[in-house]
Image (cartoon, rainbow, N blue to C red; front, side, top):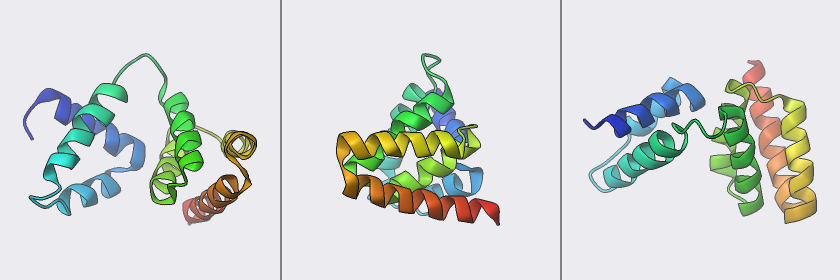
Amino acid sequence: MTDKLLETGRQIRGEVIGEALSERALQATTDFDRPFQELALRYCWGEIWGSEGLSRPTRSIINIAMLAAMGKPNELRIHVRGALHNGVTRKEIQEVLLQVCIYAGVPAAGEAFRVAREVFEEEKK
């Protein structure tokens, strides 16, 4: 990993989801999934999250809504934690998930509320 966008992505991901989680993902990378990790770091975290077009809290809110609507609890967990680190409040997360309930359905929102509640409890520790 030597290019600037890749390094920017690595830095931003660490800032948003936490250095420990970000580094664990990198340490667990194999030859098989290294191209995926580098793609995500370069374009998701470096290019998109590195853009100044939206604030990090706004990006976090967008990700929570999309991941909840898609029913992706593992990624949702990471991004709820990241949203808290980015200054998004629990009340704002609650409002996002209520909107998900209306637009994406009760099952998607129910799962997302469960995931968010677990993250909130973990963050208390």
